[in-house]
Amino acid sequence: MVDSAQPQTALITGASAGIGKAFAHLFAQNGFDVVLVARRQDKLDELANDIKKTHGQLAYVIALDLGDPDAPQRIFDWCQQHHVQVDALVNNAGYALNCDFLDADWEEHRAFIQVMMTSVVHLTHLFSKGMKARGRGRIINLASIAAWAPQLKGNLYNAAKAFVLDFSQAIDLELKPHGVHCTAVCPGFTFSEFHDVMGNRKTVSRLPRFLWMTAEEVAQEGFDAVMEGKAVHVPGLVNQGVSQVMAMLPPRVKEFLSKQQKIM
Image (cartoon, rainbow, N blue to C red; front, side, top):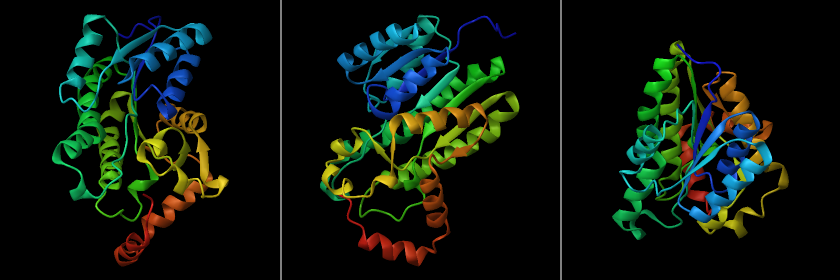
């Protein structure tokens, strides 16, 4: 039996900035305690204090690098040891490598795959079992409209987001009959630290303002989508139109467009 009086808790990865930080505030605003996961202890502590002060919810901090293969299990074990029941999981952590495939060493690619794909699957596998047993739960996986986009030369980012999109839909099909909803949220250009980390802030800043959304807008649409039980949601009307057009492009057209792209 589910204890309806028990407070609900959301676990958010990549919570220290951008969309993850916006999700943390949004879940807390809606009555969830939060477990904040990211690498930067100082940023997490600052966010936890802000959430406690602003929303009056409990905020736990786990400073870990999801590039470590042991990190998902350590996060799950921490929750078990501290009797924290996770009712909503937000797999938001992510980044991109700003170099050609062969210019990065294998450890960089391994860590990227671990963060962007393996940890998403591992955390979902660990926490969704309890959700299924309780008959309720919400999972948000951050994909991107890049899942439908022409490829960037030697870059794994689009492929990783395509994987997250397909994986999320598969999990939603399995878990929805048991009261657990999984949503792939697929934003486009978002005001956050992401492009500073990629090193392409100057390039993308030339794009028109109507192509951009704030992290708060993306989080709000993602939150609403998972609560409504949508398997896939693309935030923003412009992004919805762009993603639909890209999804319909023939392979030869995508290949041509790929050769023209230069985002880095």
